[in-house]
Image 1 (tube, helix red, strand yellow):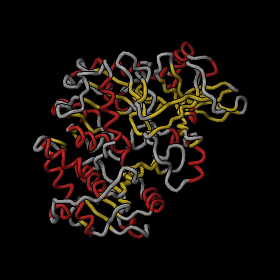
Image 2 (cartoon, one colour):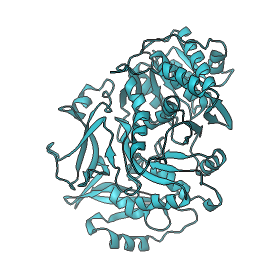
Image 3 (cartoon, one colour):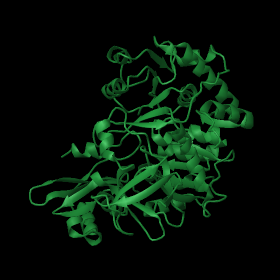
Length: 510
């Protein structure tokens, strides 16, 4: 079997093949593949001079920016371990993670929401703090690049070495560190490329040098690896958004003639309900992929109408199973389609027995796209890995054609008087109601029935929702036991850093 090229060699090959073509666009400045190689290798040599070595853990705590891309490439070229951190984390959360993984260095910004001296004083293993701004009393990122050589020696990085620790957002508890090896970070791009073989997608999604995507999701997210990896493997260029904003998104799509976009459902909803959205052109878009949480097919079809030349695809993956694992055909976006060849999927009941076609159960996975386990969590690993299968915690069903449908999280199931209610089902019905922009359903304690449904919604701007009319609509569309006991209207639902609704925060309202 042909040896897999390491990240350093992929960067070299991309510079030779694509040369002065645009790899990334950031703050209206274009960065070509030659610049990408030279700056990334200079940074890598600088990290070596700082005493960092293979296996050392280096955190990136930044909003999306070109420095984030260079940091990924430098860390991976050396065989170090990247710790991408959500930029919304507090100092205490960051320090907790840093202690958990014995952090050696951090690449960050003086514009963090806390004093960086807190990190130095609180993390015993932290040797170096690098900032992307000058004159901060810390090591200046661009000085490292400007004072080092752009030739980087082969570091003998192998595919089975650990490349990354992705800490989960902690929506359902404290953050856990998901381990990826060096093969995993390349599988993100390869699995994307695989879906272009779908007959309905041929000629629409190519993932080559003619493709331009927009980086609207955080680079700290496991799916954020898509952007640097599709660049060096396939020549895809990306427009970097420092932070998601729906108006800025449509402006950048129009200005840079973006061909494709990956986003989570709340981001699409935010675009749909932009004021005067019809004034913006999304004609360049050929495809849009939704992933990260169960979505409303009806709303995705509305988004499709905004993009006359685009198809919409529904996908599935998770930090623990290298995304994307599945992607739908455009003709069936209620499903997430069929999986890549790297994994085997099965749906099982609580006893681990495979359920019949059409029945709902827990989705379990095995194969090389499954992560390496949780860092320093032996008990948790024993709980989620059974007989070689990873238990995802996602509820799913499969149809007779082999397409999978994600119902929601098993922890997102509400047990009302012994009957199961899937929160995602209630949320989809709510999102079909005119004037609702966001919706979340949770279970709350009830003396009589154990649990009942409680809903939180955010209306479209300036819409005054009538709760009595909304309840009448729900009674016509949901079984009685699925009806919410209460509906709370908020201006906006709380989000995690990756853009998903933060249900743990909603539980705190009770």
